[in-house]
Amino acid sequence: MAQKVDDALNDFVHGRLSRRDFVTRAAALGLAAPTIAALLQGTAAAAEAGFPITGPMEEGSGGTLVVGQESNWDVLDPCLGTGAVTWRTCLYQIYESLVSRDMDNPAGLVDEIVPRITKSIDRSADGKTYTFHLQPGITFSDGTPFDADAVAWNVQRQWDQSKLGRKNPPQFDTTAAAVRSWFWTPAQLVNLRTPDPETVVFELAAPFAPFVSGMPESGLGTMGMSSPEVWKKAGTPGIAAHPVGTGPFLFESQTPGDQLSIVKNPKYWNPAAAAKADKIIFKALTDPATRVAALRGGDVHVIFAPPAQELASLQRDGFIVTARPNPHLWYLQLNANEPYFKDRRVRQAFFMAINRAGMAKRLLKGTALPAISVNGRTCPSWTDQAGYPAHDPAAAKKLLAEAGFPNGFDTVFQIPTGGSGEIDPVPMAEWIAADAARIGIRVKLRTMEWISYLHAWAAGMPAGIGMNQQSWGMTSIYWPNLPLRTTSVLNVGHQPDKRFDVLLDEANSAIDEKVAIANYRAVDVLNAQELWLLPIVNDLAPVVISPKVRNFVHSSDWWWDFKKVWVKS
Image 1 (spheres, rainbow, N blue to C red):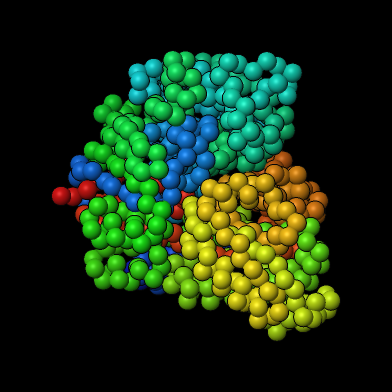
Image 2 (cartoon, rainbow, N blue to C red):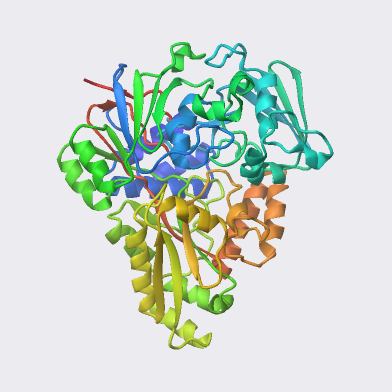
């Protein structure tokens, strides 16, 4: 189906198919109306801004691809590494996840699970047993076998069996279990069986609708499979120091905070999908101006998170700017412990004061879309019918007065100066503060560098902080559990409404995916009424590439699959 949707979408983008005809064809292929709407809106916005979704496509191979990253990468251990930059930089290239999505599909249907190291997946009728059938004959790059025992070993590094009254195996890592608890705790895994070398059986205590879709997400699930032999020889530090997986690239070297190099895996298990480039070098260039200068100077071939104001100039100079929707959501969380935000009318007024469409068009130069859902535009439960209030400063000012704040109030907005997926946070926060001031809310910005901010954000908002911000989101329907469940450690605004928990429990336990999606959309509708989480914009994630780069497909996710990319001399 993906190829047929791809063809239809390309016909629409190039004017060979009308909007009505695309909708008719997409519906006939089985796409739901919200998915069609997300594809149309996001793709049309990128096209209107003059951004294609691929670079030049050409058969060939070779060269060294140099990539300028917007931040440093985390630890190179698939159980411990977090963040999109880490996954994009190394984990997706060296390791392969038990569950994979199609990262090279121009149609953007990244919710579609594709065969990789897992050949197929069966689910029992009661939704509690998942059987994974592995590809036969795969080895890790150190020559040891990738099989059912290796999968079990990796899962047992992060699955805490002591909660079931069992003893954890030697490779169990308490930090890994904590990092991945967002997935394994609600999944309620009670048993893991390996009946033969090519079969892994997961048994759950209850149905868990996002069990498969959550696995390939950064920060969730099984992530990449690492060689047990590395741990046996060098322990957990050895895994991060010299990553060994089954992927198309091999780790070569790294200088943390500066540069990381990977090279083509000459013995990749799937020769038809072997890497095209000889080598990829990732450079941590945290300053946007430095990234642009490195691209112009020929020191890098690709840059992520380019400054929006530089895009037109870069295009005029022959560089290619690609963009497309992804799971990204730039959002605010309001502190329920601050007296003024306890009143729903105040939360509504604050949201209605923010001109999200103006921010996306004028400040961000068309590189983002105003967000209208807590879900990203690639998520099956995304909807444009949740009912978020429109921008209306006059009505917002009236609501404030009704709530007892005719003269507004003072609040503090905690914001990072940059980071993974952050777009341009300080100017965006200044835009929000200016909009809020028009209805009498006086916002003071408190800025922090990214790593310090992450620690402060994860700790939850203390008294005196009215709101903070994050850039996240998932293609998996699981996402709303993280910021909106009252018991979640990432409910950093302490929202107290247990109606969210009820809807999330119903969604998670649904056997029928349509029922799960309907309940996740109900969560969105409830948030549109209560507004504890304020969706601001969805990034189209512009990437700028040199005209020397071939076969770059702009992924509809947070990370990229660089297997097909090569550099023409």
